[in-house]
Length: 93
Image 1 (cartoon, helix red, strand yellow):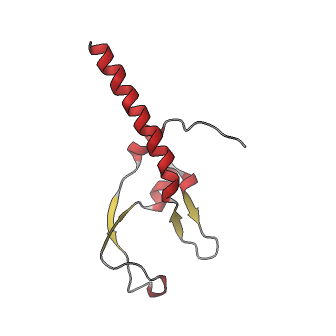
Image 2 (tube, one colour):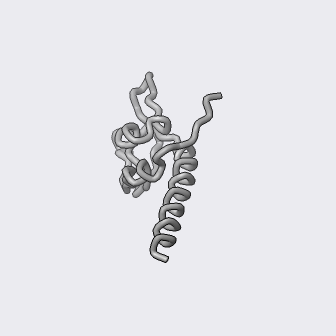
């Protein structure tokens, strides 16, 4: 139902910034966050770019990211990028 192509995937991916961070485990012991350095995205930043990949828990008020939802966008971005490279190379030839 309502199946559509992902438009502008490469532009969306270019706007996403990966981060390294540490959870504030001492403040949120009940969350059982991993200690040490983690890699990921900031949900509040991602919601402006790909709101479909971000969930706001109405009870706790915390954001979470559905990283699986990023896969189709990454696939389409790679295809767009390869298409642009091929066009550029063809024009140079």
